[in-house]
Length: 206
Image 1 (tube, rainbow, N blue to C red):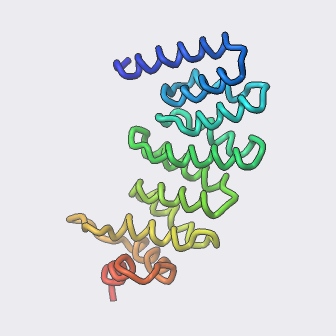
Image 2: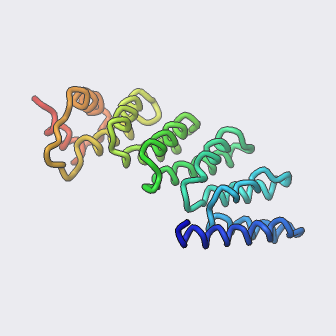
Image 3: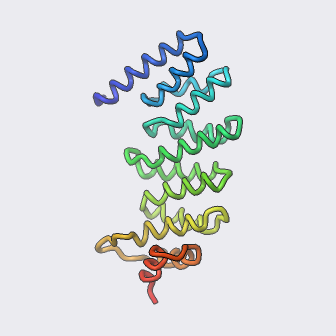
Protein backbone atom coordinates (compact mmCIF):
# COMPACT_ATOMS: atom_id res chain seq x y z
CA UNK A 1 0.00 0.00 0.00
CA UNK A 2 1.45 3.44 -0.93
CA UNK A 3 2.44 5.59 2.04
CA UNK A 4 -0.26 8.20 1.38
CA UNK A 5 -2.99 5.55 1.28
CA UNK A 6 -1.66 3.94 4.46
CA UNK A 7 -1.79 7.27 6.28
CA UNK A 8 -5.31 7.93 4.96
CA UNK A 9 -6.42 4.50 6.16
CA UNK A 10 -5.00 5.14 9.63
CA UNK A 11 -6.72 8.53 9.75
CA UNK A 12 -10.03 7.05 8.63
CA UNK A 13 -9.73 4.27 11.20
CA UNK A 14 -9.17 6.81 13.97
CA UNK A 15 -12.14 8.93 12.87
CA UNK A 16 -14.42 5.90 12.66
CA UNK A 17 -13.39 4.75 16.13
CA UNK A 18 -14.17 8.21 17.46
CA UNK A 19 -17.49 8.17 15.64
CA UNK A 20 -18.42 4.82 17.17
CA UNK A 21 -17.58 6.05 20.65
CA UNK A 22 -19.19 9.49 20.37
CA UNK A 23 -22.59 10.10 21.93
CA UNK A 24 -22.96 13.81 21.22
CA UNK A 25 -24.56 14.60 17.84
CA UNK A 26 -22.44 17.68 17.24
CA UNK A 27 -19.27 15.69 17.84
CA UNK A 28 -20.52 13.03 15.42
CA UNK A 29 -21.25 15.65 12.75
CA UNK A 30 -17.77 17.09 13.16
CA UNK A 31 -16.17 13.67 12.83
CA UNK A 32 -18.25 12.94 9.75
CA UNK A 33 -16.98 16.15 8.17
CA UNK A 34 -13.44 14.79 8.55
CA UNK A 35 -14.13 11.58 6.66
CA UNK A 36 -13.98 13.26 3.26
CA UNK A 37 -10.30 13.94 3.94
CA UNK A 38 -9.62 10.25 4.26
CA UNK A 39 -11.59 8.44 1.58
CA UNK A 40 -11.82 4.68 1.49
CA UNK A 41 -14.72 2.26 1.32
CA UNK A 42 -14.70 1.71 5.07
CA UNK A 43 -15.96 5.26 5.57
CA UNK A 44 -19.23 4.76 3.69
CA UNK A 45 -21.18 3.03 6.47
CA UNK A 46 -22.31 6.23 8.31
CA UNK A 47 -24.51 7.12 5.31
CA UNK A 48 -26.94 4.49 6.58
CA UNK A 49 -27.11 5.90 10.13
CA UNK A 50 -30.57 5.90 11.69
CA UNK A 51 -30.34 9.58 12.61
CA UNK A 52 -31.46 11.77 9.66
CA UNK A 53 -29.10 14.64 10.47
CA UNK A 54 -26.15 12.28 10.67
CA UNK A 55 -27.13 10.61 7.39
CA UNK A 56 -27.16 14.02 5.76
CA UNK A 57 -23.78 14.93 7.25
CA UNK A 58 -22.37 11.60 6.08
CA UNK A 59 -23.76 12.06 2.58
CA UNK A 60 -22.34 15.56 2.30
CA UNK A 61 -19.00 14.25 3.51
CA UNK A 62 -19.13 11.49 0.91
CA UNK A 63 -19.98 14.03 -1.80
CA UNK A 64 -16.83 15.94 -0.85
CA UNK A 65 -14.65 12.83 -1.13
CA UNK A 66 -11.16 13.16 -2.58
CA UNK A 67 -11.03 9.76 -4.30
CA UNK A 68 -13.29 8.17 -6.93
CA UNK A 69 -14.05 5.05 -4.88
CA UNK A 70 -17.06 6.93 -3.52
CA UNK A 71 -18.73 7.27 -6.94
CA UNK A 72 -20.74 4.00 -7.00
CA UNK A 73 -22.24 4.74 -3.57
CA UNK A 74 -22.99 8.34 -4.54
CA UNK A 75 -24.71 7.24 -7.74
CA UNK A 76 -26.88 4.89 -5.71
CA UNK A 77 -27.77 7.66 -3.28
CA UNK A 78 -28.53 9.98 -6.20
CA UNK A 79 -31.58 7.87 -7.03
CA UNK A 80 -32.67 6.59 -3.63
CA UNK A 81 -31.98 9.07 -0.86
CA UNK A 82 -34.49 11.55 0.52
CA UNK A 83 -35.13 14.45 0.35
CA UNK A 84 -34.58 15.42 -3.28
CA UNK A 85 -32.00 18.10 -2.51
CA UNK A 86 -29.69 15.44 -1.08
CA UNK A 87 -30.04 13.39 -4.26
CA UNK A 88 -28.69 16.41 -6.10
CA UNK A 89 -25.78 16.72 -3.64
CA UNK A 90 -24.93 13.05 -4.18
CA UNK A 91 -25.18 13.34 -7.96
CA UNK A 92 -22.96 16.40 -8.13
CA UNK A 93 -20.39 14.67 -5.97
CA UNK A 94 -20.42 11.66 -8.29
CA UNK A 95 -20.01 13.84 -11.38
CA UNK A 96 -17.13 15.76 -9.81
CA UNK A 97 -15.28 12.56 -8.93
CA UNK A 98 -15.92 11.08 -12.38
CA UNK A 99 -13.41 13.64 -13.66
CA UNK A 100 -10.64 11.99 -11.61
CA UNK A 101 -7.98 10.84 -14.06
CA UNK A 102 -6.77 8.12 -11.67
CA UNK A 103 -9.90 6.12 -12.53
CA UNK A 104 -10.05 4.14 -15.77
CA UNK A 105 -11.66 5.72 -18.80
CA UNK A 106 -14.19 2.87 -18.89
CA UNK A 107 -15.22 3.47 -15.28
CA UNK A 108 -15.45 7.21 -15.81
CA UNK A 109 -17.67 6.78 -18.86
CA UNK A 110 -19.91 4.33 -17.01
CA UNK A 111 -20.25 6.74 -14.08
CA UNK A 112 -21.03 9.70 -16.31
CA UNK A 113 -23.58 7.65 -18.23
CA UNK A 114 -25.22 6.63 -14.94
CA UNK A 115 -25.19 10.26 -13.79
CA UNK A 116 -26.91 11.37 -16.99
CA UNK A 117 -29.60 8.76 -16.46
CA UNK A 118 -30.04 9.75 -12.81
CA UNK A 119 -30.18 13.49 -13.48
CA UNK A 120 -33.63 15.06 -13.35
CA UNK A 121 -32.48 18.65 -13.91
CA UNK A 122 -30.65 20.28 -16.78
CA UNK A 123 -28.04 21.71 -14.39
CA UNK A 124 -26.66 18.30 -13.44
CA UNK A 125 -26.91 17.05 -17.01
CA UNK A 126 -24.75 19.96 -18.12
CA UNK A 127 -22.14 19.11 -15.48
CA UNK A 128 -22.11 15.49 -16.61
CA UNK A 129 -21.70 16.43 -20.29
CA UNK A 130 -18.79 18.69 -19.38
CA UNK A 131 -17.13 15.75 -17.63
CA UNK A 132 -17.87 13.53 -20.64
CA UNK A 133 -15.97 15.88 -22.95
CA UNK A 134 -12.81 15.36 -20.89
CA UNK A 135 -12.70 11.66 -21.81
CA UNK A 136 -12.01 12.29 -25.51
CA UNK A 137 -12.60 8.68 -26.60
CA UNK A 138 -14.69 7.09 -29.37
CA UNK A 139 -17.19 5.89 -26.77
CA UNK A 140 -17.45 9.37 -25.29
CA UNK A 141 -17.93 10.85 -28.77
CA UNK A 142 -20.76 8.39 -29.43
CA UNK A 143 -22.42 9.25 -26.12
CA UNK A 144 -22.12 12.99 -26.79
CA UNK A 145 -23.71 12.46 -30.19
CA UNK A 146 -26.73 10.86 -28.54
CA UNK A 147 -27.14 13.94 -26.35
CA UNK A 148 -27.86 16.11 -29.38
CA UNK A 149 -31.38 14.66 -29.21
CA UNK A 150 -31.77 15.44 -25.50
CA UNK A 151 -33.87 18.62 -25.22
CA UNK A 152 -32.04 19.62 -22.03
CA UNK A 153 -28.47 19.57 -23.34
CA UNK A 154 -28.18 19.73 -27.15
CA UNK A 155 -25.87 22.75 -26.91
CA UNK A 156 -23.65 21.06 -24.33
CA UNK A 157 -23.58 17.85 -26.37
CA UNK A 158 -22.54 19.82 -29.44
CA UNK A 159 -19.80 21.63 -27.52
CA UNK A 160 -18.54 18.31 -26.15
CA UNK A 161 -18.33 16.88 -29.67
CA UNK A 162 -16.49 19.94 -30.90
CA UNK A 163 -14.02 19.77 -28.02
CA UNK A 164 -13.25 16.11 -28.65
CA UNK A 165 -13.26 16.03 -32.46
CA UNK A 166 -12.00 19.52 -33.36
CA UNK A 167 -9.81 20.63 -30.44
CA UNK A 168 -8.37 24.11 -30.26
CA UNK A 169 -4.90 22.64 -30.73
CA UNK A 170 -5.22 20.13 -33.60
CA UNK A 171 -3.61 16.73 -33.07
CA UNK A 172 -1.20 15.66 -35.78
CA UNK A 173 -2.16 12.65 -37.83
CA UNK A 174 -5.81 12.62 -36.82
CA UNK A 175 -8.55 12.50 -39.41
CA UNK A 176 -12.29 12.78 -39.00
CA UNK A 177 -14.19 9.60 -39.82
CA UNK A 178 -17.45 9.58 -41.74
CA UNK A 179 -19.24 9.10 -38.43
CA UNK A 180 -17.40 12.04 -36.88
CA UNK A 181 -18.34 14.27 -39.80
CA UNK A 182 -21.98 13.25 -39.58
CA UNK A 183 -22.02 13.95 -35.84
CA UNK A 184 -20.44 17.38 -36.30
CA UNK A 185 -22.90 18.31 -39.04
CA UNK A 186 -25.74 17.40 -36.70
CA UNK A 187 -24.09 19.36 -33.88
CA UNK A 188 -23.43 22.49 -35.92
CA UNK A 189 -26.89 24.11 -35.54
CA UNK A 190 -26.64 23.75 -31.77
CA UNK A 191 -23.27 25.48 -31.46
CA UNK A 192 -23.27 29.13 -30.38
CA UNK A 193 -21.68 31.65 -32.72
CA UNK A 194 -17.99 32.06 -32.00
CA UNK A 195 -14.59 30.44 -32.30
CA UNK A 196 -15.77 26.88 -31.64
CA UNK A 197 -18.44 26.97 -34.32
CA UNK A 198 -16.03 28.56 -36.80
CA UNK A 199 -13.48 25.85 -36.07
CA UNK A 200 -16.02 23.11 -36.72
CA UNK A 201 -17.19 24.76 -39.95
CA UNK A 202 -13.60 24.89 -41.20
CA UNK A 203 -13.00 21.25 -40.28
CA UNK A 204 -16.03 19.95 -42.17
CA UNK A 205 -15.53 19.01 -45.83
CA UNK A 206 -17.28 21.29 -48.28
